[in-house]
Image (cartoon, rainbow, N blue to C red):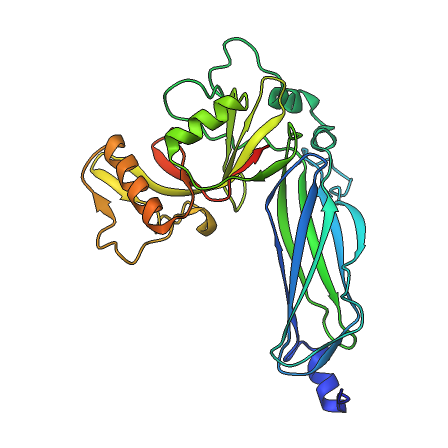
Amino acid sequence: MARMGFFDKIKASVGIGGAKIELLSSPIVTSGAKLPVRTVVRGGKLAQTLNAVELTLEVWPEKQPPVEGKPAPGPAVTSLGKMAGSEGKAIAPGAELFFEGGLEAPLCQDLYQADPTRYAALLLSWEGDEETAWNREGPVPMTDSWESATAYVVASADIPGAIDPSAKQRIHVIPEAAGKMSRAPLMADDALTGMLEARGAERVFVSNSGDVWFAWWSRGDGRVVAYSPLQIVCSVRPDGVHRACDNERIPAPSRFPKQASESTLVHAGELDEAFALARSLVTTARAGVVMPRPIGNAVAVLTELMVVD
């Protein structure tokens, strides 16, 4: 490998032509489960050397009212070590290096130390709990305040003589799974209802508290039987059914993208027409499973449905 010249080192030290790193992992993980993590190191304009890619886990405490004279609490940081195969690699200009690893997700209950009653509400099912009941008709509400502490996975690239790049991704830790979980095949939304009932789903939570919206289903004991990221396909408004692909109030990853075949983003109709539109678009794109109950006034698709075996 050719050595870096003096001026190349100066350029690298100020980040000119430097490598970049991208972190790829699921934003959702069940309590204590193994979370697969993949990183991509992309070379810049100059050849560089990668000592290693290191992973850390940051857990930020639940926000508390500020106390005068006391600094705000920082995160608890746990080192997860170096990603296998990432040590001592040459990064050619424009090249891509891929590394895979994993981490053990925090325990969900540990994230609720400041307010354990909120954690209990995720687990306990009681008579009259209509808000999160799955087996009734009507819209599913957003539960944007269910989370407590906030967790992030951080990947850092150790590159000598450069401003070391890093990438950070939030992970949402939901309660413990009822068993081993696997990716579900594509299916119709009526088949989804039967599958969830067969696995004992009693409650549903829909989260819009981060940059990815998602849903999960649990049994009466709080164990998770299914979860998936969400993409909002369309919503019902007084003047018709509106596609959500250009709705900036929804995070970009959580909008079902505009399809090449679409010529209009506003359609006549109400909820029945919204579901028909969603089923048509999702079937054509083979992009997931339509959630059979609306979320508020919106129809969503489950894009990566994980279910208990």
